[in-house]
Length: 390
Image (cartoon, rainbow, N blue to C red; front, side, top):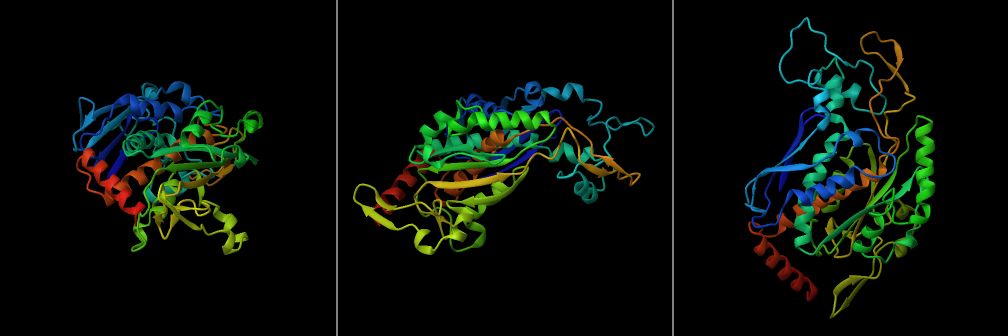
């Protein structure tokens, strides 16, 4: 599969085209809208979430609730566009007309300055409109389609927040729980945390940070259950599934690091405490005594749950802005201010869940005959039977 997104933060809409989905897969707008609503939630979101009520329109590739095998096009309209039609209009303007809300003071931590240099934009709004995390809306929509495919194959995926501003969850509170059990906890938690005992500490810190005009980051975790062993490849570097997942997480706005399983903790442990011993039984086939490697060996899945974490930096748009330089006068100024969140880590966990879902679904379609969903299901089941008795 592949997809392409288009759209600006304050433009008329966000658009995505997905190619390569199998035919006969159930798909409705309601399935996608449920995920879009999750992205807009979480304690710490800004006023933009009150303006936009994101819903998707499927405009091609689906007939009577099932995919056709042709490209699927998704559209999410920006409700705030009505206030930006003159500022972000498509049509040319008279050279004597003043362009409103131009930006010449780049914000530290954003793409503003570097993007302006790359594309030659003197008005840095041309950069921030596309580099905005608003684009992740339509990536969640795309990931929701991928999640639907995974669910058809009995594969479950869930995300949760593991740290905000130095406040960490206790893994003992959710280790051993299924993806469905974790999801039930997370969907009823203010910060999408699987350890409710620290939720109030996190929300209090977010409120204090917002009051101070600052922002905070954190860490999110994505878990996939039910992926067959041997998905991915050890043969070529660009076909390693863990590498693709790592790249997808790093592609999310403001993410600066990725780890699997024990992650960076492996640097402080001997090999005997890291590698996962192999077990076998007639009931389950091959399993692992532990899952320290997060479900991967040699760029391929082991059949154990995939566990990947990403770290999100504090959002760089601050209400007590940092120093910058005006690119026209070269004089120091405080950076420009756009609407922003004090903490978007909960929302980022939803984005992470969906970009990882896309990579998992895509890897399955690369490995199995997938023109039709019934054939794909049959092929995956035959493969599972084969690996169990290998």
